[in-house]
Each structure stands twice: as structure tokens, then as C-alpha cells.
Image 1 (tube, rainbow, N blue to C red):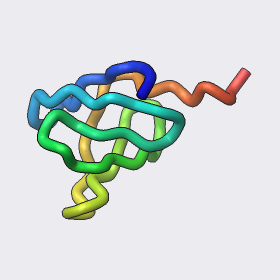
Image 2: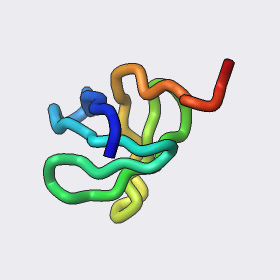
Image 3: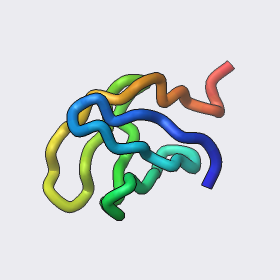
Length: 57
């Protein structure tokens, strides 16, 4: 995976690749916006630090 962002809700680091990521607990995360991600297991929304869209110019 590529970069890392911080999950501000629970302090986990998320390793990202495009719009998908995996946090340090092994949960899959889906990027919703630059500062929002959804936990794919629980459906909970999490505030994250700067998960920019790599395709946006």
C-alpha cells in the first residue's frame, strides 16, 4: 500500500491505496472524502487526516 493517514476517531494509522485502506487493527476502510472514511466491517464513519484523492488535479 502507499501512504498513511491518521484516523482521528481512534488513533489508528491507515495504510492507503487509492480509495481503499487498512487500519492498524486490520479493518478495511473506504475513502468517502478528503477527511472522512467508512469502516467496511461496522459501517461507522471516521474522521481522518488528509486522505487526498490521487486522481484529482
